[in-house]
Length: 328
Image (tube, rainbow, N blue to C red; front, side, top):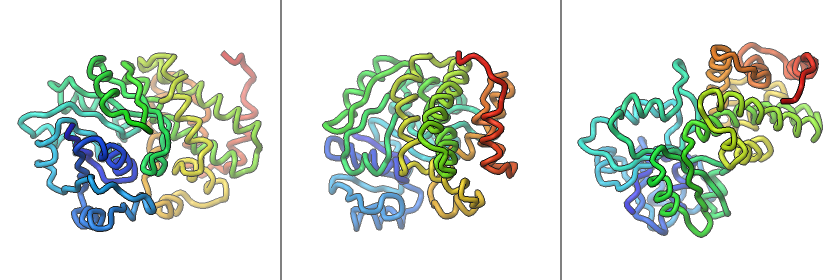
C-alpha cells in the first residue's frame, strides 16, 4: 500500500518508520529543511533523537503530490492543526481512505476529529481513528505495541487493521469511533493529574485511586457523548490511560510532575518543546462536562491548577474532602 503520513512530529514519524519496511511510505511535514535533514541523517533529531529511520522511508514537503498519490492518508498533525489540514484535503479532486491519530477536542467549539471530518469532508465515508497505548519512541524502536482502529465502516476497519499490522505492531478493529476518540483525549488530562500526584510524592495508593477515578470520569463523559462502555475498558481507554499516567515518556505526565514542583505552565511547555495535548483538552472537557451535567472533579481540579493558579496541594485536599458518595 502507498501510505502518506501527514505530520513529521514524533508520532507521525514513528508510525511512518514502523510501516516503511512493509509499505511505500512518504512522510510529509511543513518544514522542508527539516525533512531534508531527516532524509540525509535518517533521524528526526527534533522529535525522535536516537531512533534511526529506515532507508525505505521517503520524505516530501509537497502536500498536493503526497495527498494525490496515496492509497491511504494518515493524519498525524496536532489537534490544533487538524482543521487547516482537512481544509487543504477538501480541495483535492479525490481522496483515498484516511485515518487520524491526533487526540483532543478542537479549542473553542469542542469538536472531536470525526465531527470536523463530517463538517469539512461530508461526502467522505472511508475514515477512521487509530489510537491506543503507544509512546512514539518505543514504536520507532520496534517495541511491541497494540492499537485500536475504529471506523463506522467496519469492513474498512478490519481491512486496515490487517494491512497495517506487523510483527511488532498489532492493530485491532473496532466500530466505536466516539469512544476511541474520547479515551485518547481524556487520558492526557488524567495523566497531568497523575504527574501532580507523583510529583507531590503522595504514594502508590493515591495514584491507583486517581487512575481508577479518572477512568470513571472518562467513561461517564464518553458514554454521554455516545461511546460504548466497553471501549473504555480496552486499549484506547484503560490501556492508554495506564501508559500515560505511569510512563515518564508521557509529555502530559511531565507537565504534572513539573507543576507539582512549582514551575509555571508557560515555562514547562517551552522546556518540553513538544505538544502536550492534555493542557488544551482539559479546558475544553471541563466546559463540555459543565454543559452536559457530567461530574468530572479531577478534570475540574486540573483546569484550576493549569489556568487559575490553584496550588497542587490545595487541589488534592479539595478532591479528598468532597462529599462521600457511592462508587457507582
